[in-house]
Length: 178
Image (cartoon, rainbow, N blue to C red):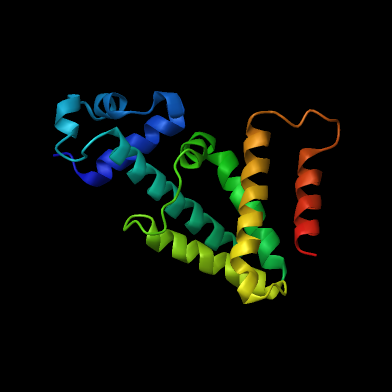
């Protein structure tokens, strides 16, 4: 009997093994050994399937970042979180790419819990760096723009200059924390 967890794992497997282009209802059904119409007993359509995968991807990235920052104190937490996000995106490049194609909706029942926890995790790190609580939304938007842009450019091999990309990333972290 197929259940939601099996469908989610099959869908994530499709994305991670075959890339964003290899993901869809037909591919997931094939992976599960069922006909595509049978999958519609569990999800309405491909958009709902993608939403489930994107939300789960965010949960997995959050848990990874939490595991990396555990026990880290003070202002170092922000750099650890940034490095953890980049590391997770490297390890799950296709899933991160799919996640980047779907805007998180903070009002949606699916996204709201993970977004609130991610906001809290980064807010705590920002406080430790001296960022006023009233400026957290602005700081997080700037941080997300920097991180997401860096990760996407790196994944697309867009950093062609001779300097080491990791050194550039560390330089970015140091500048953001000041």
